[in-house]
Image (cartoon, rainbow over all chains, first blue to last red; front, side, top):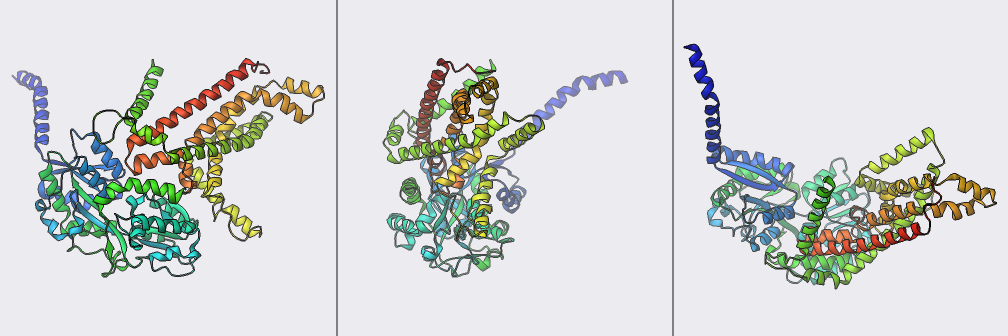
Length: 344
Length: 272
């Protein structure tokens, strides 16, 4: 009898195991999930802690985080699968989001589906995306080499800074520096000529033109240049570790600001995507992420991180670009910058 | 068979690039030559191509002038000394290209040790701006590609029969004449190989102008990068890359013709 019982168990063990595997995988597929594409590295780690894991715990929706190298890489990835989009929320910046919206890769953002959108200033919500966090740019300079304290953006034109400035090129930050020069000279997104004129006047003071902040900060640290235009506070704090000669100034009269944002990808999981974005815009999630990444929260009710507060006084004037206009003009600006300003 | 597979994969990538260059980039179906029209009528594209060729030629000639004596000397040493030289060259060859460029910045930068030495001995009153200019890019291209030149020259030089040089000496030729009439002509294949390699690598270089040109020197590869990555114009970038590829193939064909001409004039003689 025992032998018969054992033989019976042995005969059915494998099919039962197989059935169990099929059932458990079906259960896994029935679990809700969401795919979030964002920057990798430390940004992904901060996001995990701030809202990805809390969202999973609260809703039971499993979040898969995928990394893109930069927004262009992210856009290319989405374009490649546009007929079968498998990403639900895309972390990007307003200009690539606007490009993606024009191509139908992301859906038109509906703020009515995000209760926490009411806590954001209107300028942080575009048809293509909603702000995740904000940042602004200031000037970093070596006060042991620069002969005067820099307080205004127009100080960059001072002839005493000849060959000393790391100038961002038009490809860097989607043309923000060129736009800042235009704003300072009375121009705008629709009238960029004053920006080009000022960029040409600035050329004798350019020590390097850079495409990424790492190039700028390496040149500053190595003493190749003594002023860095368009630096984020977080980047400055990293540079200043062990280099106390560097100072950061949120130069007058206003600082160029921008935000990175969430776009809802035009797929089949938009309901969960909106839930996720709403969660990420809650006060707790915003404060957690901002304090880790040293950025300004998008939500008004969220507190500015203590480490950032000294550099972002309450009366600081932020000037945001109109991404819908920049999106259509950026290519021309970059071509003209290369031909007229940087390498004529 | 594996060769065919590798070649097929390689050509598939190229075919994809050409196909992209013929697309509109807006998702609309159909092919277009608009991107080629823009490139071929763009004075700026030609100016970058001419600049890239100019810097590539300079860096090739300097690499040849520096690399030839090194390769020639290597044929005259042996044993442990030769092994040490090979080891140093191999370390240089396999070292990270970007780190080599940062080493150039450490040496030639405004705060680099060459400027510090010049300032220290009072030779200059302020740092000499070696970098962030066409000069800096040429320095970087030579630093990055010199090892390739030496490795291309050495095999040819080491195969030259020393009896020919000895015979020239016995017949009264001075060392300079021995070099010009015997060694140099017989090393022509190595010179052609080294120059082809260094020229093409310099022409298509991205990292060196990006780091050492600091935006003041825009070579063709940095232009294509801007088109593809900074302004999301993949079709235009693909067209630029295709035009560059065709021009490179034409240059290679020209160099190949030179090599065939050399061989047809009895260039194989003089080998060991």
